[in-house]
Length: 481
Image (cartoon, rainbow, N blue to C red):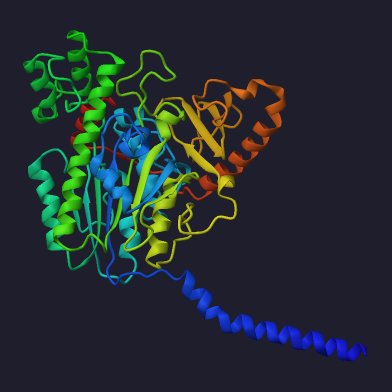
């Protein structure tokens, strides 16, 4: 009797295995993405663009009509966060899929002033180099004024050290490259400073608000060139001298810059449609950090970022138009900019390098609200801040005199903050002061310590480089020096 029962169980198991094996190809096909033969990618980073100032986010001004149309063809990640809160570390994280503590571009901007800055960790490749490492015969193109000396220029066939959105003449160079490569595999990276201070656009400025001469001066300011006397500081002085230096006026100019950049992105989108490559494109729009308009620091509303991890500093847009699929989707769980590189590789079925710390956004998460979001690398000298976020809880620590790879000094923490963004979206109430939240903070700190220490272990570069005079001039014009 017992043998009959055993035999019956064996037959049932065998039958189940046959059913599973017979349906496995069907299950695999259900999850298999259709990937077009060509790999054509455009990645646009809009420096200093706050996520909540886009029309598609519900902002009160129609700042981004072209991006709103793009969102309808895309996946719109409404809670995206960079891994640093100023340009250099944040962009290198975007382009390598690694934290600043791993890629090494994590110093404050006084290092730039001293004409030295860390180079990209030699064991890490940026996205252009990664794509070049596969046998896919891909053309890599870059339009960005990000320092080659730091590793931003590695792996590109054509490296235009320009802001292509500065003028129609320069954006035409982008359009020409699109035309030349429409039948080829290509990766095109564009970075623009046109939203960053000085806020030199007037689209949303009411007529009659200021005189025509002053309005013309603001609108043409960037065309005056990057001479020392024509810097972000000079522009600030102009605003103060003319009683225009206030948060409403500066925000109006800032929003006008977003509208201008949106028009430039619209030109590229329209050109891709004319060339017949729009449907095949992976088209990504993102930012490296936001901008502060007096939300947490009184009287700080002009060119004020890189200092902290409040939402206005680090909540950025991320829009990904996947070729032929996933149209009009809105994702509200938290994602990180280190996830962009592995997402690109995953979509095109290319191997994700072992140094990458991000995760593909195409990967299903069992519990999306449990994903750790980590940001680090601020711009202030002699300080470092590290942030970890899970769900609606955000924990920030401030370290004094950081050192070692990864800018860490766990023995010199001078401030701890915990915010519940569900109950306190404006981040006004530091819960660390309440003893009942202390255990949560300790657990967050242990997790953050483990993540950063593990990340910094493989930062073996330790090399610094001198920045050329052109780069220093640009940094000065933007107000960094």
